Length: 295
Image (tube, rainbow, N blue to C red):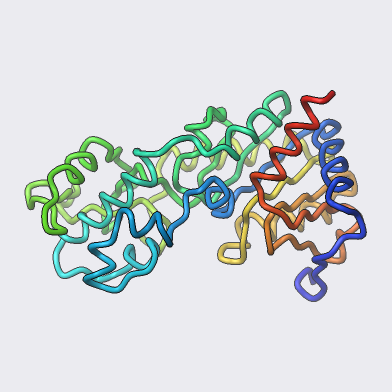
């Protein structure tokens, strides 16, 4: 039903949209933030271009990769090379990073509200920015976690110490064999705890966060909820976008807000309950923070 008639335009100008969203943030009983990759892109954590060349020029030269996504799915001949890529990827996107400005700005905007964050991002930016961990649900995994590649047990493992060793000790695009991580239960190679196949491990922390999200939704059923979607594209719409549309449609008091440059859309069925801002996320959040400070 929703996909038949999508709306991308608004009769309101940019400043009117900002004012409208600001009022919804102020008046909402609860705010549920749905964040996708566009949030981190707006923060400058791009996976291609100059940033990719800075960290992966050797892989580009050897394999022709043009972005970090491509290298992550390549069938490397050895685990030494596989982990040379992934340790570098993890390091530059999870450990050797600053807090992205859009994340810190968003926290300032909603920190006094009853909020929850649902995100498909795996770069840990929400926790780095200071969001309450009990109000976060990372549905797709975390760059900072490993799991058994065979998913022989439902447990994940922190990887920071080993990743740092891999990065500092790799040579000629390979890590030392002794650093290859193996499952402590079955001995199979470890892999990233990222949802890319049916072997993804949902550990105790994942289920705990899912429970917190379900409880938040239950406690605010029928209330004035602002579903604030930022940077969610079309790759995984069934996790955030479609549920947000459905919950807005089912609740006359709910408002759906979408901030995403080039992809700010909503179904016609919830047009009167929606605010779609086709602009850079960082710019919109900065404008919202500015208007908040002007109060």
